[in-house]
Length: 256
Image (cartoon, rainbow, N blue to C red):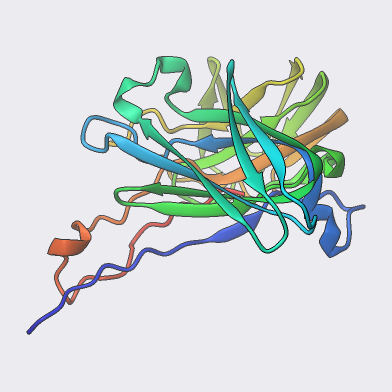
């Protein structure tokens, strides 16, 4: 009997930590904000799963509230009782504003930790979220080469300056009618509770190749950053049909 397997490469990278934060406990808090990219959007990849992995050291059960826009969901956790809270998206029914990112707030009375997993037909990724109390004002972003993504998350209003660093020094990045090149800067004033995305992921059939790794993001107030890649696939068949000689993903999705 012959078996065939398909291996997904899962990259785990943490939300970029500002320089002053040290120690393992900095990943636990009472209030989190995060954004996630929609990895496989389009009519041929209609579903996308977001999994919030919640854990705590608190011995008694308590409620974690998960807010998205005007909707709220709840999850009960306690020590030795981590919970996976799943959300299934129909990506072909998203509005144009929702097509590239989703924005969430999670909060509770006691400290907890949060890991986000993104799962779709041909890609997967995960990242550890830093609590809002652990945010900083200065970050160096790390991205992948295919469809790089830098997403800025705010809890309070902030003025942010992005100084672009491109691995491909001759590349251009078009955003809001401006062609940005290596070394140029973008200044933007962001309101509270918003997400500002620097990425090119609206057309799957035309991938954008140029890493933004090293790009400096500085603000006059604390903010969060999620970076990596906003679009990826394995260029492979579904697991049940995969040939034995083609089992490793050729392109990986990562955020964090």
